[in-house]
Image (cartoon, rainbow, N blue to C red; front, side, top):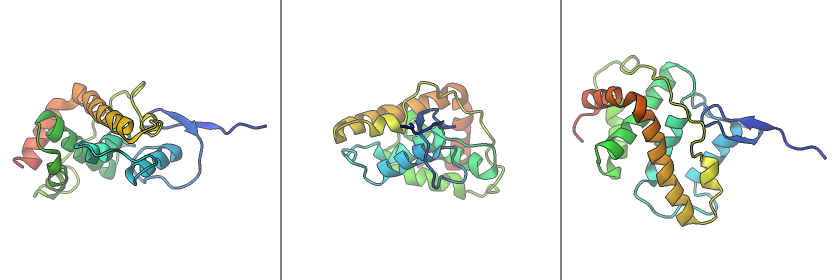
Length: 175
């Protein structure tokens, strides 16, 4: 009997059985991790229970899986950490997440070059979407999603809060 080889996700560092198939072109995730995220985002089984921060799952995931420096990955990470900053640090309503995303990319600054690569935090031992997917009930999944979102922001905030706050003021402003 052969066992399925494991692969380590380059973003969150979780080890999962290796799978073939599509991943995102600039989010740095393994195929198996991307599959788990896609399943959670599309309802999962069991689905997430309703929660005010559920919509930030995409922001936390993208921030935890920053990929490698490129114009696309730099802008993606910036937009997603700006949402986490706005909702979690500035305590804006989670309903403003889409507004923040749109403002972060639609000001008059050039599309590329308004943000710079931030060295990602170490995600060793962090909550992952695999941990969320392993929860047996919608309520347990939602509880862990909330912790996951806060933990990802906490790790980014520890090293880059001032930069992200300045970007927010410059490119998002008042919501």
